Length: 134
Image (cartoon, rainbow, N blue to C red; front, side, top):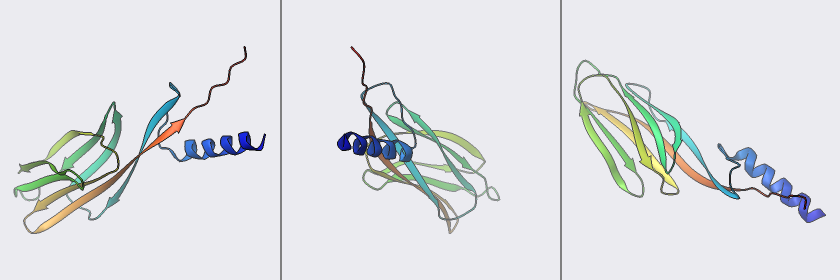
């Protein structure tokens, strides 16, 4: 009986700390995304959630005196994923394939200034136990 209580407690803790969980199968994957704002400015990045095997982010770039801005998205493990130049306001949704533990850096360079936001993606597995009466 003690083992069942410990297992139930451990599963409850996992479910409480998982950012998203789904009770549709015996083993589900939830993704926890944490972010750090390094600098305030013309770059705004929001985590929108998951879509299948992809993470969704909304990136908003605000033009600074019509200067050309360089936007770069990098993954610590994969390197540069995406880059573009902008000279006007832009809002874009970016889909990134989930590959396990990821460190994503969104960086905008305007002249000599850099603005960035970083996201740490940690997938977790949530086990669901189903007991039925026969």
